Image (cartoon, rainbow, N blue to C red; front, side, top):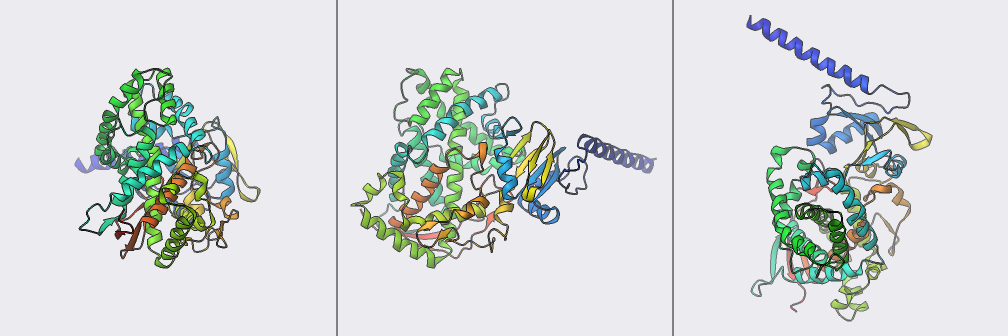
Length: 492
């Protein structure tokens, strides 16, 4: 009897699985122009486990087997994965009425809101995102960059603060992350009312991949850290919302003041605003910190080019500015000189290697997506478009030796950056999903590297950078914590 029950249970399970498979196939009929479907062995679930735990490896395997455009079943939904310049460009240019951006996911997991999530998300897009897009362009961002530069300088000078220890050993993440976070956050929000939330931010950021993947068992501490950040910010919000609605918030940037004013006009509660500000803080810090970590690690892994850059950077700053403070207060365009162009190439090469396939958008209506050589792909309502920029960035036909970090890959001679390679490089997305603060992000990464090179002599440790591409959010994290030895170049 027991064996019979086991047999009938097994048959029932098989029937259920085949029913699910039949149902899924009925929901998504094969169209003549449909991309090839990646083979999976578990109905409905498909490649969900690999998609969550080994996404980078899975996409590489599928791309090799099915080509640059294919469909992958993930938990009942098809993801149409695209990884060629034209398909990615067309996917990112498709209007939001057809391909809906999914950055609401971050808003949802960080705010924890459910009842008014759509309204709060829309308000965030219509206010803070617009203020960031307008206020952080190259010709308008000096009110943010100058205080950030000075705060960063103060933070970096304090890294080695004991006169009896002229040099220290420190990991790259410990050197980069808190110094960028505290400088950028203070420049946006002011130094008077926002408490130091770096430790909680770091815990939240470490778990963001699991939070957005709904792996609750792996991100409980990240959720708790998010709640602590929000609670710490609430007094700042109460003070800001309690004053004159048209008056700027004391000591904060115009971007934050304007956003808080619109949040108040929109009727948001103190709790909702505090949670939204956590989203803003994550947005202005996370990728900047990750790319800076990666860029510094890759730069130090090539001693010859690192020492060459040090010589050029130090000479240029000394010759062009009467003192370092003048350099910090200069217009953002001042660092776009030929002596610093190699750092732009370093940053672009870092973004090429570390950018991950994380930008996906829901298809709201059946449509066609143009690809290479006139090929057209049918995509169906309810599916998702996943832009696999990593697949494009590692295409050897566009980037020879794609696995290798080549610091001057994007250099045109010694003085400028190539533009012809940019059509195959999309580190900041594109179209309506283009990163709104990309110019500010690139500026801060470059300024951090410039200040580090000018202020310190660094002896890199024995470390060959490698990136964790499977469990990172948008930028691959360094594996391990590479250590470097640092010494101040100046005592004052």
